[in-house]
Amino acid sequence: MTPPPAPPYWPPVPPQPPKRNHTALIAAAAAVVAAALAAAVTVGVTGDDEAKPAPTVTVTETVDGGDTTAADEATEPAAEESDDGVYALGDTVTYDNEVKVGLSGFKRAVSTDTAMPESTPYVRFTVKVDNGGTATLDATALTVNCSYGKDGHSSEAVFDSAAGLGGGPDTQLLAGRSINVVWGCELPKSEKLVQIEVAPDYESDTAIFTGDVK
Figure 1 (cartoon, rainbow, N blue to C red):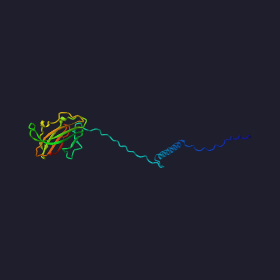
Figure 2: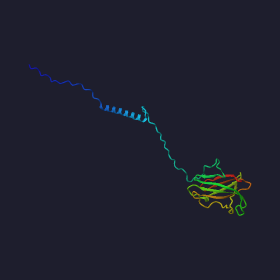
Figure 3: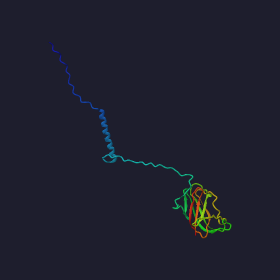
């Protein structure tokens, strides 16, 4: 009998190691590198070996409320007003529009026989209006009212052309200019206390001056 042919020889195949997930390895390596970089940057900023949190900055926004000045509001005296709203005879009142009003040169006199009222004891003084603002002031609207005594007797204005008492001005007061107006108010010889109320124009509040006249 013929023996059967021998089976072909195949060398044994060595066992293969399990395949690794390259994607997971790349992701893990990237995470490690990122963490290392973050730590290095933090250390470089703080100068310490330990990472520290960044400071918190609070920003406060300032909002401009704008100009709310009403055009029709009366101009009020500023800064020099006393607690009771009354000024001394020698004070100067400054309004918000930079118009100033002051009294000076108080003297007693008696009106002439051609004055109105005639032959009447009175006090004369100078009203100074200084327009320190930027707009023209209607000085023709200047008003001056007087009273005297503790009981507040009404004092009549004295008009005496012979003594230079002709009433208020008839001109406009330009910005940066001033005007002096000589005024007279009835004041009996037995009285000393006077109250003089002055308004430089129709749009301004009245300033009240008071005090004794020698």
